[in-house]
Length: 92
Ligand SMILES: O=C(O)C[C@H]1C=CC(=O)O1
Image (tube, rainbow, N blue to C red; front, side, top):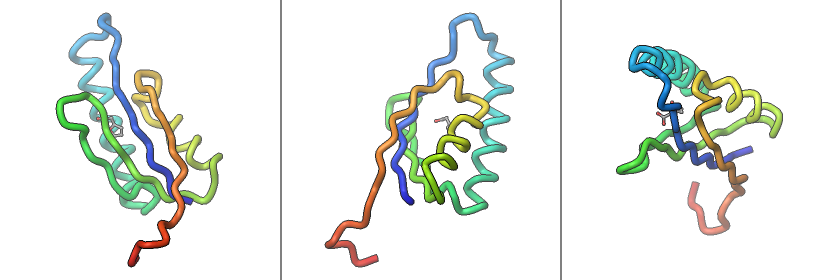
């Protein structure tokens, strides 16, 4: 099951630069492990925003929720999820 997720990051003003850097390092490790596993197919930065557009390929809605809520930056992100199906004109 494929999903498009739009994630927007907003850290609280009260967070120190060190805390932000620590969350970003944890996020990178978690994110890259999922990408290597194949469940996290792609991630793109949205130009000009602290936001990304990502594609996931997972076995269920529950698994996607597990992945998204496991992101170390989950408490600081708003996430909009769109289920995808195959386009009839796709050659892949
Ligand atoms: O867009 C970001 O930097 C946040 C984030 C969510 C997944 C990921 O790898 O990074």
